[in-house]
Amino acid sequence: MAKKGKQSSYTSPYLRVGLIGNPVAHSYSPRFQQAALDALGIPARYELWQTPATQLLERVRSLCHKDCLGANVTIPHKEAVLPLLDKIDPLAERIGAVNTIVHDDDDYLYGYNTDAPGLLHALLEHGIGNMDTQGHISLQGYTAILLGAGGAARGAAFGLAGAKVERLIILNRHLERAQLLAADIQQTYEGPVFSLSDPSFLIPHSSSIIINATSVGMHEDVSPLPAEVLARFDADTFVYDMIYNPMQTHLLLQARTMGLRAANGLSMLLHQGALSFTLWTCRPAPIEVMRAALM
Ligand code: NAP
Image (cartoon, rainbow, N blue to C red):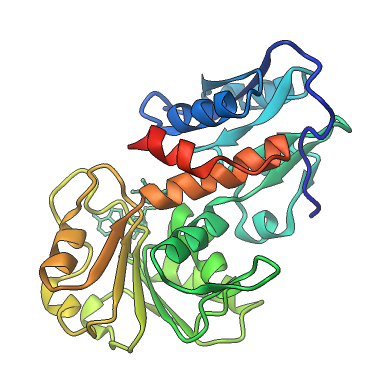
């Protein structure tokens, strides 16, 4: 879908954009989005819009106000907003989740998913993959091991498949969920997709990327992958944990102790936010300003 957003000059003295979710108070987004708006002199405020499910329709309708650029959407509304929008980007449609709404000049509300490309941009920043002259990121030659099959994993799986990973292995506690996600991916992805629930069946491949898209490690000091399984992987394995709070999860500590390259989810948060920013404003996001505000 063509890039939307406010292409006209800013006529309102005070514009708004915000985060729709429940809860939202913990979010890092206002920090770096506001820094970006201020850095480019865009007269807008990034707000937190705590929204229970019963008020979602009303909240989404409020985005049609002329002073509103759009919104980010987070848990638990990423799927529920789809039928409330006018147009959905094909990637967001396939994923079945929207994390960015753009209120365009034509007064329509457009839904996008920047989590999936945000992950690819984060991997690229960590030296994983290549970008061609048209801005497409390729992960050809890599094996992706995706831990989880929830909302974040779903976006990641479509992003990884779109970047043409060599093979995709989905490992989830509940096998049926991994199998369902694998079946969805296989409708458009030509490479092999495997689903597992027992990590001991993981077969290591060279050039592996292990991505934690479960919430394991966020609240307790535990890892989604037993150390003996991780120890089987080659030295060129890259471990990415979507969790960024805590900054170093048990999985990242395990990986670093074994000498593997590893990174937390701050870079994905940054890049999904930067992509959302550009969709709202049609301006390149000031990435380094946003990064500094996150640190
Ligand atoms: P979700 O839809 O609730 O999915 C949770 C996933 O974690 C499921 O695969 C679930 O497995 C698994 N899980 C939960 N508890 C488990 C346990 N005790 N043992 C094994 N597996 C367990 O959540 P989500 O929205 O996908 O978010 C997942 C994580 O990604 C969160 O930590 C979130 O903060 C992070 N995230 C980060 C970014 C970023 O920008 N860095 C963006 C989005 C999400 P079952 O299916 O078997 O229940």
